[in-house]
Amino acid sequence: MGDRIAHTMNLAVALRLGRVSNLPTIWTNILAGIVLAGSTPAPAPLGLLLLAISLFYMAGMYLNDAFDRHFDAAAYPQRPIPSGAVAAGTIFTIGFLGLGAGELLLIVVGYGIEGGLGWPPVIAGLCLATTIVYYNAHHKGNPIGPLLMGLCRAQVYLTAALAVAPELSQQLWWGTGLLAAYVIGLSYLARQETLARLTNLWPLAFLATPFVYGLPEALHSMGPAVIYMSFVAWVIYALWRLMKGTQMAIRDGISTLIAGIALLDALLIALAGDPQLAAMVAGGAFLTRLAHRFVPGT
Image 1 (tube, helix red, strand yellow):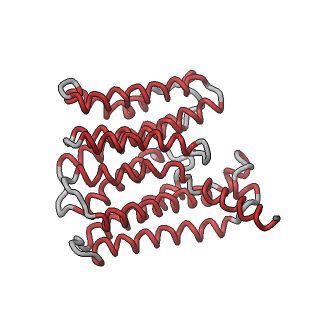
Image 2: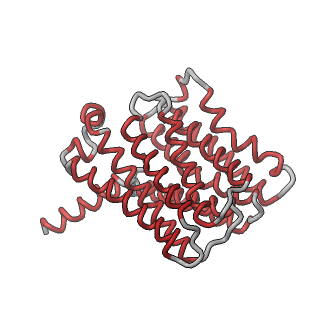
Image 3: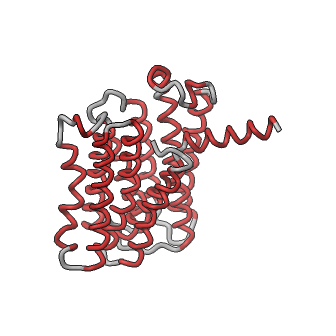
């Protein structure tokens, strides 16, 4: 019985460290990147991409806790490493091995399957891994930390696109910029204690960028309009929760904004002319919030 409990506790810690509840937003990022690149991949490369970039994400989350261990020891002693639930060295090892495994899968995508495009996804993966490590090592107290976080997410679009398309379309570059802007705004808001005492409103401008971009099409097309209004309502709810100012409400607000990444993906896919896939991708936001009930997203 004791061994069984220990195994369960270890699994719970592993899932928490990897922030696995946010993975649906990674999967929707990949689908959006592929659609914006004007491609529809076969199941094999899509499956490899989903696994590879999921490994990048979870590895990044592991490294986040490992690099933040000294800060967390003072501010969040209940987190896994300072609480003694797991050793920092173990988390560093898992994190770097995860990045390596993800990169190996991208090599398979580029060179190991029929129709692979060679080096572009491999180089994109190396750039993504480098940005992940740099962010985790230097984000505390760094005024451009949110920018680095935005670049990490933006590179998911780019990596997925370069795995399936020989050239990057203008539509893909616009989507990449919008995703980066949304994540930058989200990240800066996450640094605020509460919107009730918000002194700088400029992060909201980053958060609003996708709505400015999508408004003209939403006014003239029913499919994008439905997703657009759903996305607007989703973000307004998150900001309302942030304004409450309690620790629980702030966590809920930030988690809701994270899940909203899937709605941004859905909006961009709808604007690219695939409303059916967009509707499916929008479900990623609800799946993420459901997963947050079991594994915290922050």
